[in-house]
Length: 180
Image 1 (cartoon, rainbow, N blue to C red):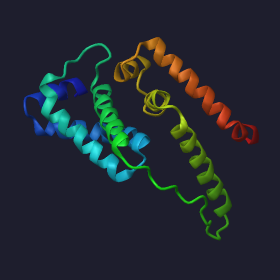
Image 2: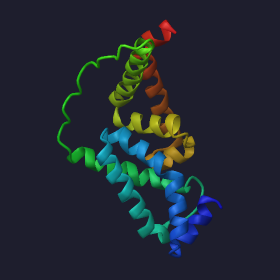
Image 3: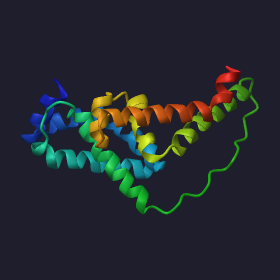
Image 4: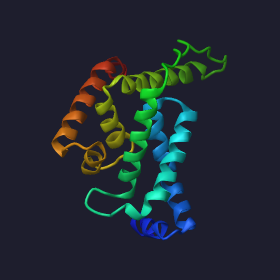
C-alpha cells in the first residue's frame, strides 16, 4: 500500500494504517529532528509530536505534486525542531576527546569516530537553511522539488543552498579527502 493510500485510511481513523506510516517514517523523522536539536530525548519528543499531528490533521493532508507524506512529515518535524531549538538553553560543550580501548583495532575505531564527529560538526556549523537542505537531500534522499516545498523555497533557491552547503563541507573536510 502506498503512503497516499495509507494516509487516506488514517484520515478515516484507521489505526493500523497509522502504525504502518509511523514504522515507515519514524527513523527518518528522528534523524531530521536530531540533526537540528542534537539531543536524543528532544528528538524523541519531536517524533511523537510529529506523528500526533499527522493523526490529528490527516484529513487536511492532500496528495499532490511535491506533497508526499514524507515531505509533509519533514515540514512538521523541522518546524517543531526549530521552535524547540530557539527556546532551548545552550547545551554544554562535549568533552574534547575519548579514551580508546586497548584493543588491536582501537586506533582505527577511534579514527573513524573522530572522522564521523568532524563530519557531524561540519554539518552542524552550516547555516540553518543550508543544513536543512543538505539533511533533506543528501541524508534523507528527499527529492529537490519536495525539499524545496518543505523549506518553502523555490527549486533554484534550494539548489543554491545545496551548492553552498557542499562547498562549505568540501572546504571544512578537505584534509580528510587529501589523506584518503
